[in-house]
Length: 320
Picture 1 (cartoon, rainbow, N blue to C red):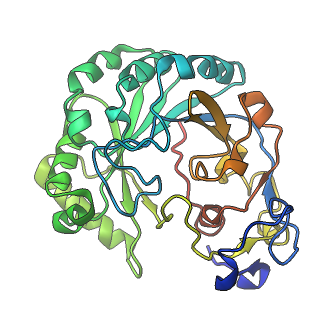
Picture 2 (tube, rainbow, N blue to C red):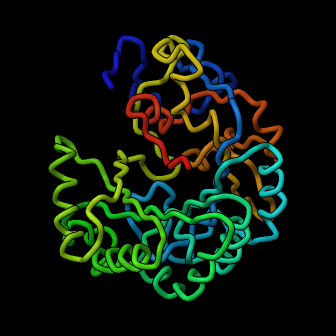
């Protein structure tokens, strides 16, 4: 999508470290009314399983690494009430992110429970934590609703992928993808966007690798920009109310995740509802302790990751 810089404000570098003003939620640094999204209907509930991960990728938007506790691990008792509140609100899908969900001790119990009520979608690196728990996944195929997986495979090059994820991670991810497919689970791929790339050529290289591994070549790809690490500020333009003229209708704003998703995040021993999967590093996106109340709060597009949704249509979601 083309982007008109005339309708956005680039944040001067000198101001990136300035403390936020009282009205920074509703107005930009230049005093312009900030762009916003009003929720429509809760269609997808994301559950953050915790930031612990078996890998320590330096680019991780969650800052995850082994033993990380920025966001504590979820338990089934934490999420059960929200699952039922979401069902009462008409939710269509439960989705899971981390960290690496399979590092969390109670994750398979959560996934088992959720997939008895709605389709489920899991983000994973498909390496050791998943491969060690395949015996626990197999019985979940008999649950009422299907479970789909999106596996992180950054580049169609093992050496380049493994620089940040660790030696052997590329091959283990492919092993995990092959196991999931061979055992009846739907799989898609999350990859990184590179500057100047030609997307069909990149994906053709992936498909050649899939052929070698006996993996279907028609797996879907979702390409993501660099979102930055937690608490970072990349100087993206601020989104004003005028910018939102590009999306004048309810239908044209539907790609913004905050119109139809919420995410559960554990803070200490309490579960809170956040606006979407990309803003858990900013407490101003904490929308309360219930899903219903969270849907009544106007979401201001202040986080720099909101700009990725605005400009690129970036979305972590994969609708049913």
